[in-house]
Length: 60
Image 1: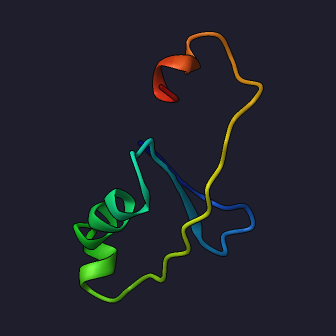
Image 2: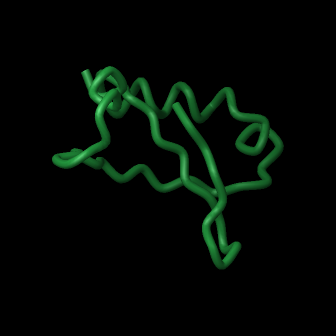
Image 3: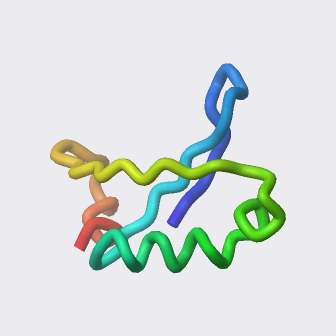
């Protein structure tokens, strides 16, 4: 998983490799921003096709 802010700073992005949407939802429920109702989340599936050498270990 990796995280970062958007530029301009209107939110952020979390990229994770999960088996299914339910696994992602479970991870979000552990996030302090979620538990403290500081952030809203939208789950968008992303299927990388072109990536840097070495990145393939993150998209297994």
